[in-house]
Length: 276
Length: 181
Image (tube, rainbow over all chains, first blue to last red; front, side, top):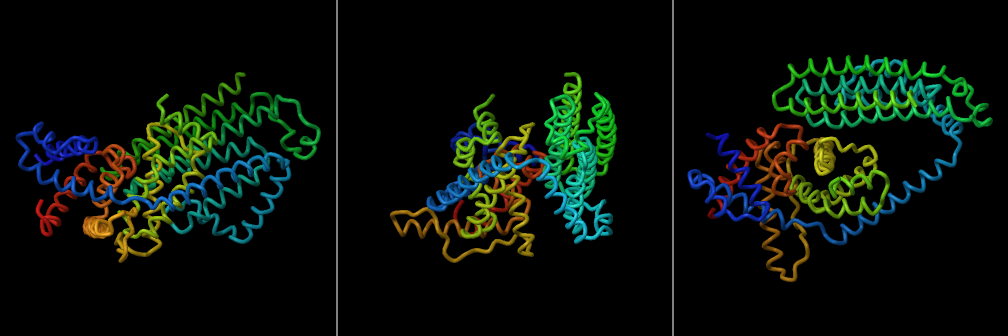
């Protein structure tokens, strides 16, 4: 009974938010009208009072200008970044990463490997991943690390879901997708390095990149890694469904669908890339 | 491709005008949601600004999937509000300020009356459970649909409808104590 009333109330609210009057809603549900009326009136009072909350126009304008400035600064930075040679950027990042490693301590980094997003060591885990990515000697190595880290995100999603922390799932799913996006980018870059004309300066600066994978070998390895990772991640996530509280299940189910889609999309991109 | 999808796609690719359009469409609703949650104009302004800065930084990684842009943006807002309460070291307890400032009205008496109404509104939201207050702020403050609220909160629509129903029943009891509904 209550569930029916919850649905009717919701339907009426949707209509009211779209301009329908309370009377109009009540006419559609004469049997429930006596129960609905006070609830709809309360809702209307609330909707009307809430609509009086408006940001001050000068505040809105101030934020808008700040965002515009940030936006153009980002564009400029991207342009400038594109002008700095890749080998120089890598060298600077590697130095920063080594320093970070020394400061944090190798033991702490190792202990953080199983940390979940709401645990104190989690930022260390992410920083450790960043360091490993920075130190990766080739784009193919980077792609492999991204597969590994994507798998970690999937395990974290399962962990958070089992604890009923549904609000973390979507953020982790986005991070998972970002890792897989990077795989494709790295793989694509490697393909270009493999097949395209090599600039002499870049070849001498990055000997490990110049030492390209045998035609197709790297891509094949990547495909196998991705398939294994897909199987493992989906197994863990589907297993977690049974241990997840009812309220968090839809979020987890959505994440599983997204992750499956991401794996398949990345696999097909890698395949298309290798067949071109 | 829908208009919103087109605008979002352009913003992802770095089109400043498209981002400005999204800003214009969502700013007021995000602000209202945050205000209802924190009950303080200065904090609401700071948080709203941070939410949009975060959205600008993260929009490049947004993937359309089945998640509408609306839900993505409100999820950033929801997470930021949770962080805010966590940092404050308190349960979601609204700090009501003495002088709530609304959009300037030409009639000071009307403005004062509205301010009182808002203050009462926020006090009532504060009395709800955190989950109920979240649903009510997103539904009535930001006018999101039940499906969108469910996506923001990572809950199913049935749970959201039940929370909404119970919240309205609780609000009715509170309001009927003070006024005739």
